[in-house]
Amino acid sequence: MLGPNRYGKAESRVVRIVRDTARHEIRDLNVSTSLYGDFAAAHTHGDQSQVLPTDTQKNTAFAFAKLHGIASPEDYAIALGTRLLDATPAAEGAVVRVEEYAWDRIPVNGFGHDHAFVRRGGEVRTTAVEVTSAGAAVSSGLEDLVVLKSTGSEFKGFLRDDYTTLPDADDRILATALRARWHYRPGAQPDWTTTYESVRALLLETFATTYSRALQETLYAMGRAVLAAHADITRIGFAAPNKHHFLVDLEPFGLDNPGEVFIAADRPYGLIEAEVLREGTT
Ligand SMILES: O=c1[nH]c(=O)c2[nH]c(=O)[nH]c2[nH]1
Image (cartoon, rainbow, N blue to C red; front, side):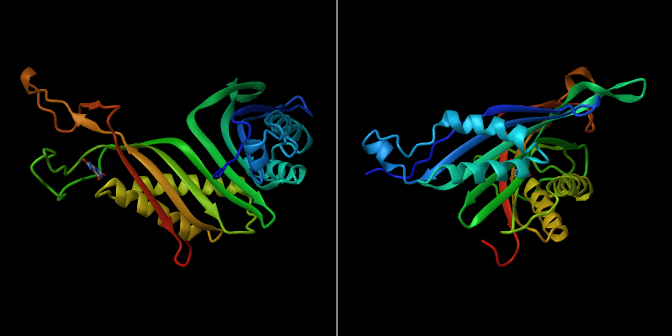
């Protein structure tokens, strides 16, 4: 038997320039769409009559960047998902995932240039919208928010067995490339961008100011801070690689090393994942 299935166009790179004035704006997105529903005939009988081609989905992503603009990734994804669902009778749902890459104006003589931009490093803003007849379920997030604190972090008192070699750490570097995704309550229509910026600021501030007994405790504190400040958000999930920094033994060179020189290991890394939910939600 055919099991669950979905199909769509992954990673359309949609760049939208707003050029109504000499001072241009840029939005740079990576857009993935998919449809699910009753597409059994396409799998069992090669019948494409209910299949809106992935090529059409891609075209719609570009057309909607022109027609609707990109006020925010969330607004754009809701509009696109609604259109794809409406256009496809067999579809029960449309899922639109967006990553946004940020560009800053290049400073020239102290002012941001009108039409020359420099890509902001690393961090990506994300959204995932699922549109069904019940409405749009929206989650938003970020990836690769790389943060480090050079003290204020320990890891000790852990379970030990025959294979444990890790010593207690009273004062270590804590670093991660954070992935976070938060879910809005059904029907919420906050200012998506203001909320994104507020959540990002709360994550950073909590990371900075919370003494960490483990990355697990830090994630939980960050999640609680977000839920406390945003009634529209029902849960937030994290994936945080523990980017280990090991103290280098400088004794062979007659040097002490009181937490000053580290080797940054890129792998393996601890991978700490957690969700924080508002009570009464699942
Ligand atoms: O914050 C941490 N959590 C762990 O679960 C763990 N395990 C480990 O080896 N180091 C760390 N650090």
